[in-house]
Every structure is written in structure tokens, then in C-alpha cells.
Length: 102
Image (cartoon, rainbow, N blue to C red; front, top):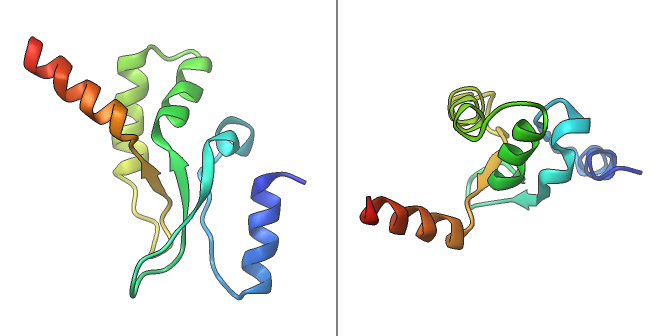
């Protein structure tokens, strides 16, 4: 059973809505778990780097993949359970270091 199927089953059992990033065969390996916060709906948490890597695997170059991700994913609100994306600290700090050296 896939992680999506397991989380969907759990959500049904707990009367909770979860929204997934599609297509599953491209992005389900980027699912890390669920994220919650006070007064907020649970949401599926994806690894940003793995989402971008999946886009690159499917033929985009890194810059196009990041642009597509930022516009079509981060820029899409589909309700309170809109998926969230983890940016790993080491990637963020590496990006900041790269910006400072250029």
C-alpha cells in the first residue's frame, strides 16, 4: 500500500480532508508526513527538493523546474488543507551562501 493510500485511509478514519500533489507516481515519494498547527487543518508535507528533483527527472532543467514549482505549486491555494513544502535548513543556508558570494 502506498503512502498516499495509507494516509487517505487514515484521513477517512479520522474524518479529515487531505489534499495531495498530483500525479502520484511523480510526487508521492516526496511525501514526508503531515503537518499541523494550532487552529489549522492537517496538511500533507512534501520535501521541496524531492518535488523539484521529480520535475527535473521528467525533463525540466533545474531553473524551469523551480519556476514551475513556485508558480504552480506554491502559488496554488486549494483550501485549508493545501499541501505544505519543507525547505531543508541546509538547502536554505547553502542558497543564502551562494547569493552572498555572487
